[in-house]
Image 1: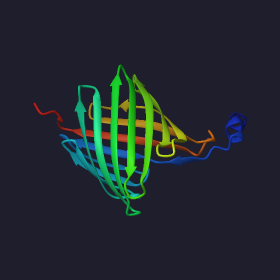
Image 2: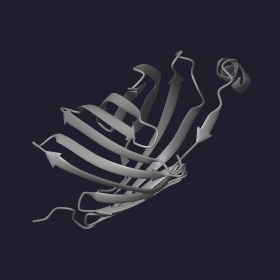
Image 3: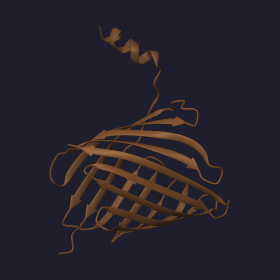
Image 4: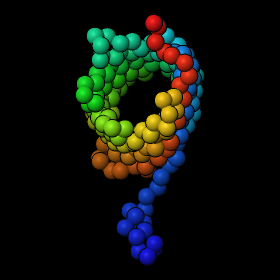
Length: 191
């Protein structure tokens, strides 16, 4: 019976990669690690520093504007010795979010962008993000993400998730599944 149930799954020959991440917040100071790109980050007060398999040194500053509007600026020095400036914005109302990120590779004079939309309702969330090459105005692909956040306690949550990428021809790439773990200690508010 188990083999019969697996037949539809094996017909699609799914290849699934596994990438987990963990983040810790201690009174506004954060530290995190993401297996996707081996990214390590540390930050406080809206500023964060990062390192990954493609970025030797990254710095980002993010802040809230007008309540639900978040914005950020960033600079990355890549492993290819490129200088990349970034700008990001996101807004969320009633569990539905819209975000846009733009990157300008100063060294290669290349501009890229991502536009995404998502939702979050009762712990279930999902998003669809399109990827663009702005200077050529060409569509580069789509990433679909879904997950469920299980708040184990007020300070500890676990989020199983899956990401499905599609290229510019809408051909599905390899799925990525993972567990996101979030820990919070102390208050991050400035009362």
